[in-house]
Structure formats: structure tokens, C-alpha cells
Image (cartoon, rainbow, N blue to C red; front, side):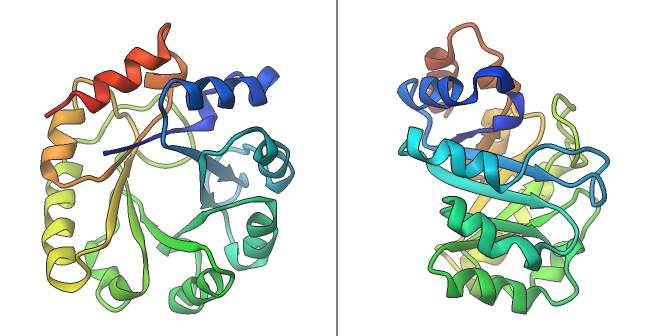
Length: 215
């Protein structure tokens, strides 16, 4: 199980310190939500912040582009230190070309699907990607409640992956906490994105350990 706390829930007044704290607490990845105010109704931060954090941690940088025209920013985020870039299927007209552009830079590529987007859009791309990110809330804001129907979607994606791309990682993002983590993992998730459940915890090490202890 990979635990990927979302920077969106950190204290933006001391980001480098926050990232170091969750690394020491046992996090595996750092999930970086990039929002442009167009594709989603909010603005977060860009490649300058990602690049500024890169020297302060060894965490895997999991960059999630919730932006229009992601192709225009792939190189910038790669140069800022991204280890993986995930784009939304709904945000690009030529998904295969976008994925190839990411992989050509020597980093991992992922595709994210919004709650109402069908898994069928992955039929001809699943062998070309390293990860699928299933949104379990509507993207754009932290602190939302988990959408229960996501569990069925995870199970169906897991079955697809076992037939087509057994190495595919399944990531789930939105409303993840210790109360629903067991169901999410049982459905087939490999990576949990947890924002407030980690950054908002009084004891972040215990919060991460609680996720790891779920069986």
C-alpha cells in the first residue's frame, strides 16, 4: 500500500517543513494537485512551488494536473521534479499523444477519471500507462466526502487491469480516511491519496500507520 498525502491540505505558510514532516512520518509519495481555475473551479500552485520543494525531500513526486491543455506544461513539471504526471482524460483531446509525451521524458504517466467518467475511455490506453487515478470526489476542492459508488468502479478497473495490464497501479483520491480505507483497499486500490486525514492529524505518523494497518 502506497500512502500519498496531498499537499493541498498542508499549511502553505511552511510547505517545506510540512513535506519533511510527512516524509519522516512514513509517507511514500507526495501528491501534488495542480489546479488552474478553468478545468476545476479553484487555483492551487504551479511548477515553481514543485521545484522549490524538490530539494527538501526524497519523496516520490506524484503530480496531478487538473488543468486545461496539460500538454503545454508537461516539460515544466518534469523539470520541476515530477516523478509521475497524471492528466485527466477529460482535459486533453489526444490522450494517447499526451501520454507518449510524458513517457518520452523518462517519467511515469497516469490518467485520471472524474466520478461520472466511464472506464470505457481507457480501453485503448490501458497498456500505455503506469497508473489510473480514480477521483472519489469531484475535483477542485479538498475536504469533500467520499462517493461510495467509486468502490464498484475500483473493482471493475482492477478486473480490467488483471486482463490487460497487471502492473497497473490504481490510485484513489478524495475523502479517504481510516473509516473507508478498508473498503477502498479491498476493492483493489494500490495507492491512497489522503489530504486532511494526514496533514490535519495531530499525530501524522499514527495517521499513516493507521492506514497501513488496514486489512
